[in-house]
Length: 250
Image 1 (tube, rainbow, N blue to C red):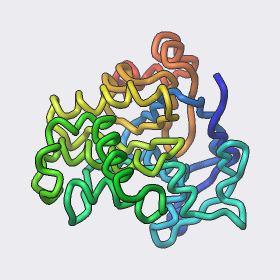
Image 2: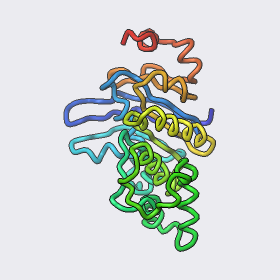
Image 3: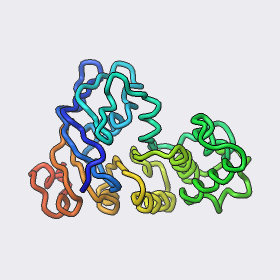
Image 4: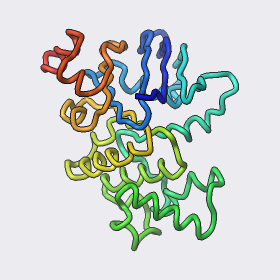
């Protein structure tokens, strides 16, 4: 599989606490990569290094390289705004902006000067359709986004993230706050979106990892224990700690 993201000797620190330890990893293009492991093992920390969101937390420090399309996003002259546009983040809980459904989707496109006028209307409809939300909101686009159910809000945030045309979609347990039907909607969209995007998800639900993953990264205590094609890792894990986790011992 062609590599889209390469992580090399990555270390992260929260003040004096080291959260990631010498992580080396290749994430395949246009696949769903699932990062799994027990709570506190560094899954979300790793995810947020992939678009430099981690540095928004005071006292954090990152060493090593994260290469996207062969370019180190931690390079001295890199434009952080462009990095975060290229690799969008879907959080655990949806955070719609305090504006209408339409304006939530249009927000990023307006900021980046991507489309205007009638083309904006067409683009908003397109991304709501891609997120599987258009039919539910097409008659109330000017209603406040906060009036949507939490499942609809998460799909709205997905549409908003896709509207700025990223290459990579990062998901930090994006279904953990949702009811089963809403979670199924999101999973279905992710399966469809991998045809165009590289998707990296954090989950603590092993069943979900097995449903979604093309490629798996198993982490434990800040280290990558094992990584590989999902079927290979789930059916024939090479490491004893991976086997113990899959059998529920960890």
